[in-house]
Structures are given as structure tokens and as C-alpha cells.
Image (cartoon, rainbow, N blue to C red; front, side):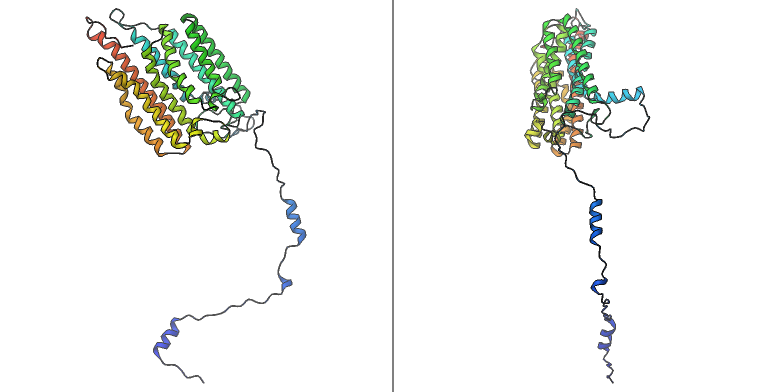
Length: 398
């Protein structure tokens, strides 16, 4: 017999320690382990789908893509639905790029004609409406043509952040989009030619340059936008060309100071185009489209964007600060809070979605900038005539 241990410490230790048990599995013979017959493995292998390799190179044939959201079979869109689709396709949010310089040039021409002898000034509304129609048609045609050639080259084939994308979303046949784009260019060019008949040969030159820029921006096999020239073309078209062209239509001559004003709008429009290219830099680079944004990289592109914005304010400050200058032009400085917002935004973000927001903020900044500039021109021209009718009219230096 084993003696009983009455030591309290020993008993406490024994009670607090759980008993250890070793569990052993039953022995299994090798032939009893389940196995998969070799024939079954071969059958499973035969059931796997075959893998085929296709080239990722763009096909020369342009076909209509599959819609992102296909309507039910038998469903037909109404005319109103088609109208909304085309309205979104022409990118109405981008049309101010053409409208703003035309308005500025026309207002500058009208305010210069205001005097004590002609307090209402001289303005040609029919020419103004015809100019707006021609310019809008040229921009719409350029955007539709741009959609066609971007899709044919494999650019923006996915669901992009921006509006439009009639072809990319599978809504419109590519050939139809190209046809309507060329038709818009033709009608816009025709309206411009009719307008130029009453203005002079210089108006033909301006109209021809605008028509060529609208098509060559993305039309040929290597459009200007694919050669890192998009910013330069945008500055020339949405700045001096349209502003001076609208002024020319009203006055039949050009003016140096109106050209200086047009530089500001050109810089703002170029900043808009540049941040748009920054947003699409990765997809453009993959498709072989060379833009300044894809070539410079993000840090240098940010620097260029800020310089373009600051450059827009420089001509206005230079015109408004000197003695006996039209100081009301400095009203555009009320947009400085918006300028701070877009600059801080571009410095803090790199995602395409955020750059898309900054792009729209840039266009809003340009709209308010132009509006304040127009107000300054009108007030500077009208107030002296209304307040001091017996004094000589205080004409602007342009």
C-alpha cells in the first residue's frame, strides 16, 4: 500500500493542476486511407475550360461596344430620352469655355461705343447670336469627333468620370457620332462664313482657324491633343481667338487691350484643359496619347496648373493698378477665395475623382472671373455718362 500524503501544500498543488490525458488515434492501415483514382483526376482536368490568348492590340475596325446597362429586349427609347442622351453627350457643362470669351469680346466692343452722344452704344444682336451659334456648333462637333477618335484608339474605353462617352457607353454607333460631329463642324463653319461676309476678310481667317483647330485637335491619326499641344491650342482658341473674334464681329477691327484681356481667359481655359489631362494621365499614357500631364508627371503638372491660374490675374492687375486706369477691373480679385480653394485642392490630391472635382471648380472660377470682368467693363463705361453727362466720357484705355 502507498502511504497517504497529508501535506497541505502538496494537496493544494495537486488539486489546482488539471489532469493530463494523452489521446491516441486508432491505427489505420495504409490501404484503408481514401484515395482519388487517377482516372478521376484526368476527368476533372478534361472538364476545365480551355484558355485562349488574344492580342490586346486595338483593332482597326471600330465597332459599337456593348452597353454598360442594356435595356430590356423590345424596349425603345422615346424622343425625349434620346434628346437627354445627346444632351449629355455634347457635354453642356464644358460649353462655357466657348461662351465666356465670346461674351467678353462682345461686351468690350459694346462698352467702347458708349458715349454722351450715344449713351446706348452700338451693338449688333444678330451678329452676336450668330457668333454664339457658330462657336457652340464648332465646340460640339469637336467633342463628338474627339469621342470617336478616342474610342477608335482605345482611349477612355471604360466608364470615364467625365460626361459624354456616347460611344464608350454603347449608346451611339461610332460612325453616327462621327457623322454628327462633322455635320456640326460644317454648319458652324457655314454660319461663320455668312457672318464673315458682312464683317470682312479678317473674320474669314478667324473662322478658318477655329474650324481647323476644332478638327485637328483630335481628328487626324495623331491629333494635336496627342502631341502635347492641347494646352497651347486651348489657350489660343479659348483666349485670343474667340475673344478678339467676337470683338471683331461687332467693331470690324482689333484692339490691343482686348487682346490683353483675352490672355486671362486663355490661361484659365488652359488650366481647365490641363487638369482634365491630369485626371486622365494614366489612361492616356497607356493608350499612347502624349499630353503634358502624362509627360511632366504629377509634381510638375501641379506647378504648371498653379502658374496658369496666377498668370490669369497678372494682366488684370497690370491694367487696373496704374493711375487713371479702370480700377474697377480689380473686381476680379473677389474670386481669390475660389483661387485658394483650387490651388490647395490640387496640392492635396492625386486621385482622378478628386481631380475631376477640381476641374469643375476651375471652370466655375473662370465663369465668376469673366462675370466680374464684364461687370467692371459695363460700370466703367456707363457710370460717367449717367453721373456726369456734361463732362467728357471717361473712356477705357482700349
